[in-house]
Length: 120
Ligand code: 5GP
Image (cartoon, rainbow, N blue to C red; front, side):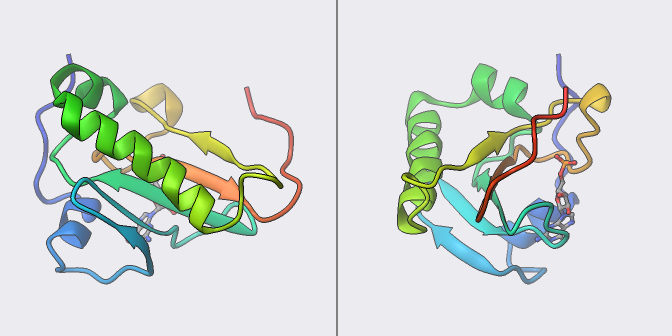
């Protein structure tokens, strides 16, 4: 089981408008913004608007509508930025072994040029 959701996490504060972000996409179910410490020429984070700690939490408790909306939003961000043909990488860290730092589900989107090999 996942830890309870902590409303004070940094992405919750971004969703509430308490902290700024460089927004690239928003709809009813998702918000996407540039990572503050980019690990690729283009590094975007896509988060669901609901209060979910991780992929595990979301896949268990998220409604079908929220899950569909979030998955479509990730695809839309890639299409909006012309990434489908050159390609991109998606990654979601879950839990301590993965070094998940922010306890609100986020999918990393890496793109903008040839990427390095996947790390483990
Ligand atoms: P994790 O390690 O949890 O998968 O990834 C967390 C990501 O959030 C990191 O890539 C980190 O650079 C990014 N990040 C942390 N704090 C902030 C912030 O305040 N604003 C933005 N835009 N990104 C952040």
